[in-house]
Every structure is written in structure tokens, then in C-alpha cells.
Amino acid sequence: MGDRITYVGLDVHKAGIVVAVAEGGRRGEVQEYRRIANTPTVVARLARQLSRDGVRLRFCYEAGPCGYGIQRQLSGLGYECVVVAPSLIPKRAGFLWAIARQVTIAAG
Image 1 (tube, rainbow, N blue to C red):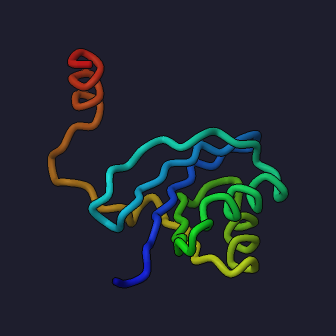
Image 2 (image 1 turned 120 degrees about the vertical axis):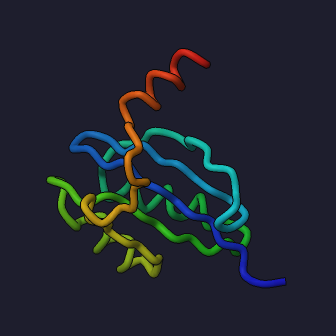
């Protein structure tokens, strides 16, 4: 059995971070985990909690006005962390996000 990897997506804002987790590799279901404060202490605690039981973590968040502080902190703690440029996130050609959101809200 190989290493267990958990992918952690961070939606970073000045005051807080929304954390989403995909357990079980790339095909794992993505679930909102929790909302946390955007402080170094809370981010470090989150990483420790998620990495219990020998799980490897891979963090990712979108580049924005909050900078690279979280990336430097997580990398310094020994975790993989990638900051993605919004312009490089792949999108399906011709896909209208506003319409998709309206359909999702109406269906659910």
C-alpha cells in the first residue's frame, strides 16, 4: 500500500480561510472541512490535525492579495504547498460559470 495523500484546498482571505479536503487521492470526494482564522498558529494546528495517522498533505491555494505567507509557513513545516495563478487554472472552453451556478442553486 502506498502513501495516503490528502489534498487540501484553501480559500484564503484576510480574516479567514475556508478549508476543503479531498481524502483518498485525486479521486476522493471534495468536502468543505471547516473555516479557520488566518493566523500562523491556527494554520499550523490545522496541518497537524490533518496529518495524523501518517497521512501526507498537499496544500493548494489561489494566488491573491494575501501573498505567499501561508505557502512559506507550510513549506517551512515540511508540507507541500502550491500557490496557483488564477489565469493558469484550466477552464472548459465556452463554459458559462454564472449559468452553472444558477442551475446548481435551482437544483439544490
